[in-house]
Length: 405
Image (cartoon, rainbow, N blue to C red; front, top):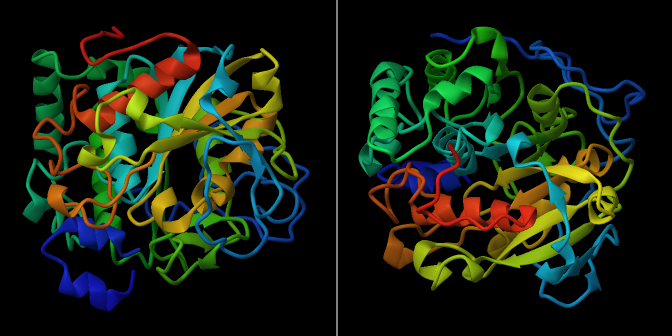
C-alpha cells in the first residue's frame, strides 16, 4: 500500500501490514534473472543463493481481476488450472510429519505463529517480512510499532520465555520440536512496512530453539520493498504496491521450499495440477465472524491426486491479498504450485477477509488478538481452522481439543 496510507494508519498494524542486530548481514545471493537458465535444481543447506525456478514466467505477466472460484469445474483466466469442489481431494495420501508453512507480511507472522504452535507436525517454516512468535504481545499498539516499522529489533528474549510458558500451559506444542526444524527468513532492504530489524528479531527468536545453521536468512535484499518476491510476476520489486507480488528475478517460493525440504526436483514450466475449493465453514461456524472467507484453496498436483504419498505446505497470504480482494492471483502466481507439481506437495492457501466489526478492515491474519485473545495458541479460531483443513486433506480429522504430541 502507498506510504501515505501507512502514515495515516500507523495506529494499527492491520493497516500498516496492508500497505503493501542479530542478522547475518547481506546474506542475499545473486537471485535469478527472469530469463536465466533454469537447468539447476535448488539444493539444501543454508546459503542464501536462490534456487532455479520454473522455466519462463511464473504467470501470465498481468494481475487478473477477482474471479469467481466456486465449486463448479472451470478454467482460470490464464488457463493453467481448474477449480473443482472439495471432493476432489478425497483419497490423498498425506504424510503429516512433513507438513510445512510459509507466508508474507501478516501471513509471515501467521506462518511463524502456526509453525511454532503446531511444531509437532511442522518440519519447516518460511517467513517473508514476518516477525517473531508473539511479537505483538496481544497489543495492537505494539504490533503497529516494534513489530512493523521498528528502528531497532524487538527483544526476542521475553518472546522465547512466553513461548515456553504457553507450552507449559498446554496451549501450544513443545517448542523443543523446533530443534529439528528448518527455517527460511526473507527481508527486503527497502521494506518500510516490516522493517529489517523486525526480521532480525525473528532470526534471534528461532536461534533460541534451534541451531543457527538450520536458519537461512536472506537479509536486506537490495532493491526489494514490501513484496513477496517472484521470478517474473507482479509489480516492480522496489515498489510496495498491489498485488504485493514483486517481479524481483528471485524465486522466493522455491528458495523457501528448498530450505525446508532440501534438494528439490526441477519445477514444472507451468502448473498442471488442480485447484480445489475447501469450504472453511466446514471447520467453524460463521467463518466471516472470524475474518475467514467462505473458501480456502488447495493446489493438488497430479501425482498426489493419483495416490502417491505427498506432504502439505500451507501458505498464508498478506493483508489485502486474499481471494476476496485480488481473486486467484495469489494462489496461482505466488510461485509455489510449479514446485509442488514435481515434488509431491499439496499447497493449502487459507483465506482471510476484511471485517470492520472484528477490527480487521484489510483482511489481515490475526497475530495481535483482533479475533481471539489466545491468537497465538492452537485453539485460536484461525489457527484451529487451518490445522483442521490440513487434517481434512490427510483424511485425519482434527479438532481444537486434539493433541499432535
